[in-house]
Image 1 (tube, rainbow, N blue to C red):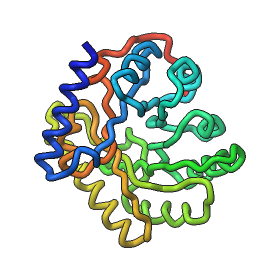
Image 2 (image 1 turned 60 degrees about the vertical axis):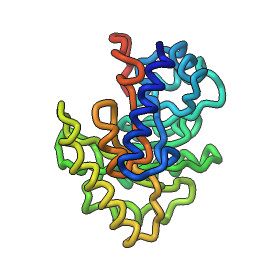
Image 3 (image 1 turned 180 degrees about the vertical axis):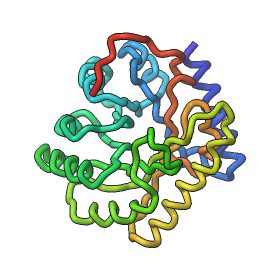
Image 4 (image 1 turned 135 degrees about the horizontal axis):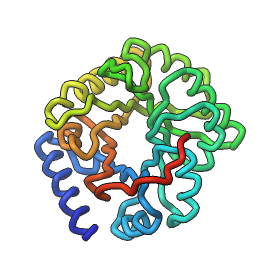
Length: 232
């Protein structure tokens, strides 16, 4: 049953917080709902989940109107500039800003829609060519560019570590993101309260290293349906 699964996950989150000396209210659970049917999202909402993460604009645009009102939607996948105009109407936070061009495009779309949007900068801590994200050495420059904008608020960073079956392999990447955030605080004046890091296989390690948003999909919903997926 979903309620049992969620209770078990919450217990794991609580244990990780206790181990790290953190309060459980410091960690937000983002239910990654890509390829998850609206009926299952509705079930999750009845058990208290309010924040859901989608990776693709087209899927989100089709799905969100079919889900309960009052939920909070986050974009966690790569965002192409030609899809930016849909962001203000669909999402309450974006986790994946990875360039000045994209940051300015989101700001422009928000200005046209009359909204203000919190965003996270995706940082490619591992340096993998297959991953999106700004290089660590370019973070301060992107924060400087954000000062000129009026409709986006940079509130932290996101990262995805290299894939591994051992959760401990993710620890140095999570720790490095926290260090980058701490250094950026001192060098930029931004508060940067949020770190989006940790997924189904390594979220406890992420919590120990300072995550404020953990992105959980398969551990919550199991295997996703296949087929019928539309790209960005």
